[in-house]
Image: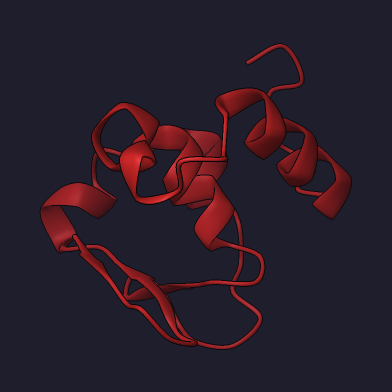
Length: 83
């Protein structure tokens, strides 16, 4: 997993991409084809949510609850509302 400091997003290796739940794999990308980058302004929240225990420390003010709310508001239809 690579996390950039500037505008870009989160890149997942094929192995990490395979670890995503089915609902996450159904999310299309607005800016690039998958499986590659998860754009920072929208899709990256999904990766942050799924792998929060591993990478959450990069965003000290972020919680899983905040990510869940953001993802739900972004309209990803298959996001489990009771995640």
